Amino acid sequence: MSATDAVTFWDGVYAARPASDAPRPNVRLVETVTGLSPGDALDLGCGSGGDALWLARRGWRVTAVDVSGVAVERLAEHARAHGLDGRVDAVRHDLHASFPEGRFDLVCAHYLHTPFGLDRASVLRGAARALRPGGRLLVVDHGSTAPWSWDQDPDARFPAPGDVAAELALDPVTWRVERAEAPRRTATGPGGRTAEVVDHVLLVRRAD
Image (cartoon, rainbow, N blue to C red):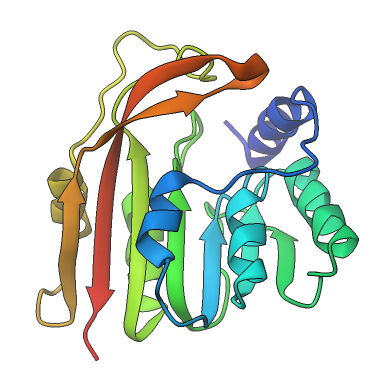
């Protein structure tokens, strides 16, 4: 499928969701980043923007990218409305074609799944290479399917964090796996629905 198909699909996904006045950050981001000194962050697949806004409020300078123009514009509007536009650069970006420029202290990729062609391993290897010394790459994947997920494929496979790390094949001298776990949590979806879900969490740190 073409890049145009991907944009159309994801624009439709976000347009169908009511714009939140206060998008929430992902739990795994909060527990990972709390206590770290702010720096430059890259949010891959920023979606509704909860992670980017949370980071910006804590002093991070955030480059937030998504293939959906709807998602990016909503995030830009949120940032302007809350006086964070100087700390959040929301940009429409197709990771299938190119990778954002810059060096970062944190790169986060939450639920970077798509039904369209994307060499995800290549994207995440690029993310690891974009880290400054001491920087961290946080990859959080679905380990189960929530009832409200856009992807209800009963045959969906959820690679374990260790499998994702192995696929990236990063040099352990330069990049060290700090966390590879599958914790459970209670998630809240549209309309306040709740469900127990599994996250696959991979945290990689670049050597100082």
